[in-house]
Length: 126
Image 1 (tube, one colour):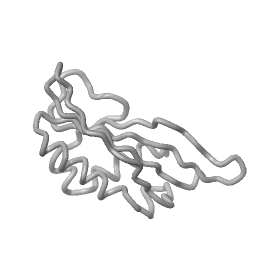
Image 2 (cartoon, rainbow, N blue to C red):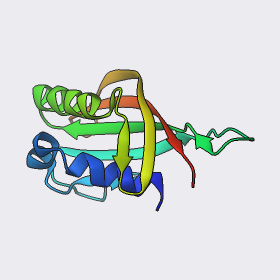
Image 3 (tube, rainbow, N blue to C red):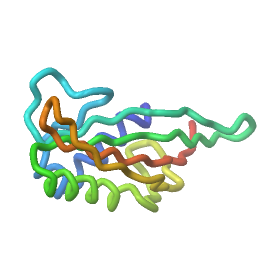
């Protein structure tokens, strides 16, 4: 199963994240007219070793909310869940979650706070 699916499942298993967004964690982009807060995520690079079965793609998790504090808190929950994570996400063996940084933004056209947080997810490819 793809790491993208397992990341979503893992984040939805975190009580604080699930209680804030329900099941509103979307691969790629948000759907049209979503309920907020919501999370969209996508792979922004797909790096892997050529001679050993280890991949280390970089993912961006974007939190969107009409409230800045809510967006910050949810982004921090994601960071807490993934930073230094080691273990299984379903059948995927994650060797390490590495926080790469985040950026706070405000989208004036939609009046949404957007916090983008990047992670490198190092895992074994099977």
